[in-house]
Length: 545
Image 1: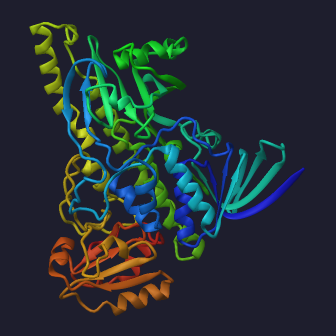
Image 2: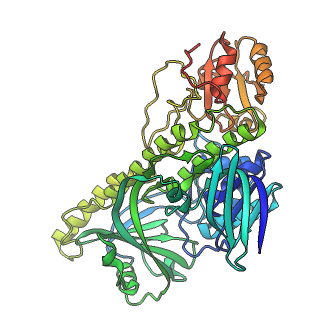
Image 3: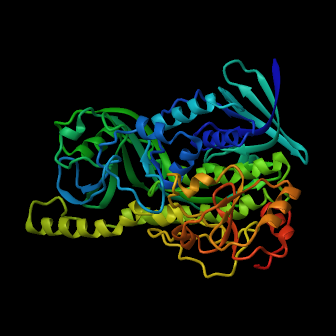
């Protein structure tokens, strides 16, 4: 028994990256099919933190409010608490507000969000079912694929019936996780550090835990003992469900006989706190990036392309960046305005970001476990008190970068992209905690509030957008050239002088993903060359106009 289907884009993997790619494609009017071998239920929730940039994309798809109000209690304080155990000595606390009290910042129209995967993935799946053009097939396991210059043929299997399913697609996107069978079939190696260490995730049910200790509400409680940092307890649902991560196993063999209950008891620090171990998941902490992000018509996105330590919460958010970069480029090819180098630029743009973020995550982790000379940290002595004071002060400063990472989140850029046109200006600093808004080519176009209450970011996505600021020259020749090339282009006049200063040039051309493609004070003489460059039809470097 077999069946056959056809779709422009086949997505393999129904995790958050695959679902977000499906939503973005549907938002662009591109049909796709997503296959997932499970029923979509979340047994080991991982994703929890959605960055400002991720929420900007959720805003684009119209699901931001739902995520804000259906995923996590808005009044839960999201501080970081360092202690010896829940009933033990406090060491330090890095205070952060709840979601409802999180202050607005001038760099974005959105706020970061805590969204446990238990709730986030079902929302994405529900929204995907509502969108025209998305076909979701659960219980459908990818088996193999072949490709040629015209398309991809995938073979899948219904895990319930054994039925063979053949799917013909123009493009295939592998969102099938760190152990990606598609990446292995393409013989694409991972590069970097395959093992930083091994960890155990212990999922714990402990209703009312917040009332059974004196450490106050926090997003995470980091535990430091005589040998240093050994684990952390992270809130999942703001009620009964928690995740204890036990760190630092040097080999897989060390965790084969892992008994979770003594570790949970050590975390609690008291025999009076009752709990239930719900599940245990061993995992390997790594710093890896695929040697290439695509072969032919097959693309890697998310964990199939990069594997990183969760310290910093960059994993899914980096994967979503892959999906956003790929979505508009697939649209360009399927609608006919993309050139032959457009999809090739996916690797050139996203792989450096993969390295940037896996490295930042690893550095965060090494800082988290960097406490030294902790032998007497549990002692009820003056010496023990001094150790607790010293270690607390050190960890307070050493780990701050993990939580305050606006530069990582908003400052990633494609300044060496073959489809962006630099103007020769000096690059802004790429700092992990500091973001400098700029309209330089390859950078996220800056946010500013428009008089009608929209953000400048709300202008971007459906097409290329040419922003014209006061004093800008006539751009009708550029508009005519775009029409001749079939390139979707909208011109937006912005008379506000403050926004003009923020954008730095009188003309700024923004891509459908919200990153600047080109800027200048005059219309370039070589307009066709500019447009061919940014749509992937011209690879050689274009001189700045």
